Length: 236
Ligand code: 6GU
Image (cartoon, rainbow, N blue to C red; front, side):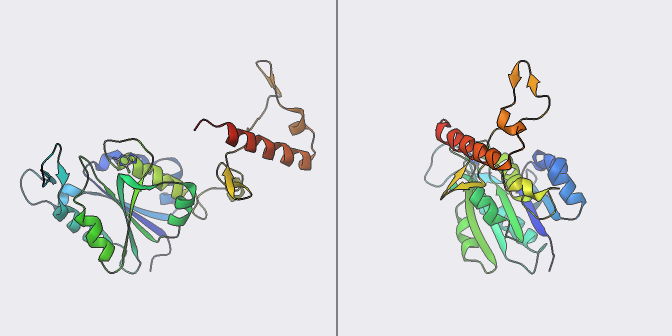
């Protein structure tokens, strides 16, 4: 069994995922902290056109992605992590909304498979089939209430939210404790307090005196008050 978390992305636009080679995620991959595969759905088609979609039963506008190439692609990537449960993430604006809490939960999964739908989405029998299949768990996930052209950008968002939480990925893990949505006040998550760095005065704007006081108790109190008021006043 692999010790690291594995991520496989299935898409008709593999180049859309090239940011996975950069920055935090690229470094985590190079350091062997995670494994990532990006797979072209069209590799699973047989006809000369590489068709992945068809007209919807019942009529209506747009095209629906066919179950068969998806089934073949998912079965193939499942074999890349043979000894663990596969969590299939189907990207759709109809899914469970991504939150920090969901990102934390997904860090526990050893093998995440992201199915990036386009057009009017994927034949629902993909979700239904894998929800019943041995060794699979299925989750439909959305990154918010707006419509994207496909699941690729949503996958980048979700993967970044997860991977930065994995052990060893961020140099100083205590920075994770004080960030937005991790500061807890009673039961509710707060957004982060404002930060300042040198110089003390920039274009006439001064750093609050309390942050220069060296009084850690007062600084903690000020930061909590700021986090509370920024959470309360944040536009809905
Ligand atoms: Cl996951 N997919 C698409 N196509 N649009 C979205 C989304 C996902 N999340 C929000 N909008």
